[in-house]
Image (cartoon, rainbow, N blue to C red; front, top):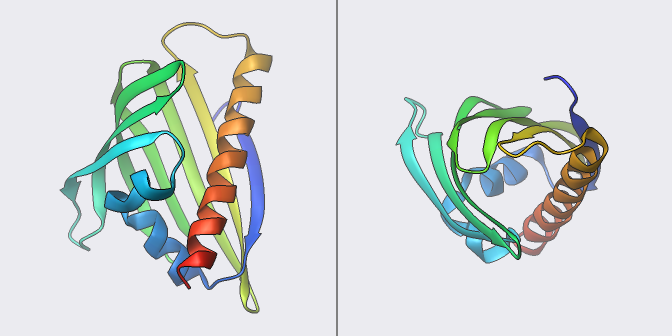
Length: 145
């Protein structure tokens, strides 16, 4: 991924619990800011999502896009954009590193929009999205434990 943003957070839970929350796309509208709908379109042989359609509405940002999930392992989830209205490309991943009773979650994201955006502003937006996503993931995992 070229020109990506990375951010980490420590969650008081085992990787399996965090992965279960990440994989529960139907529940995203309950906790993921701006996600109005997340619909699994296809699953892999392992029963995990292979393609998911998202509808987001965060004030001025409204989009519908489909992500393909390339990897579901005990320590990593990765995806890429299949199609979108506002995005030309998106690549991302969560890497989970267990340490005792906690797990460090590192979120990496690279987004290219249809409408060009100055790199500095795009990276700032990516960091804001990641910060919000990580804090919401932490809150959801720790509150459902």
